[in-house]
Length: 97
Image (cartoon, rainbow, N blue to C red):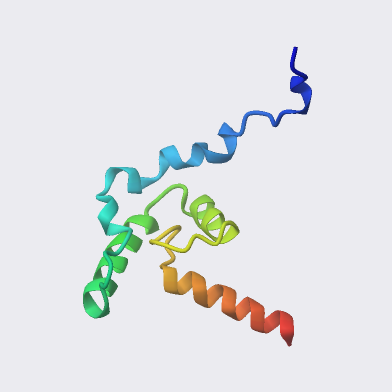
């Protein structure tokens, strides 16, 4: 018989917050830009996604997740790809200083 005490426990609690996200009721295309989208079109789509995030009960959990895993795509926790990239580049500069 397999020794199950070494196996990781259930991790549902780590992900359950996602069920409460307002993004689940929205068009996913709002949170992820199509290839080549730039300028005002991209900015307006990001702003519309962030407007949903701003009302979301799990905004903090979502943002923490996106930052922890360095989510490369989409709007997560009210932060766009560019904002997350800026966040990490500023942290890198501070650590070097």
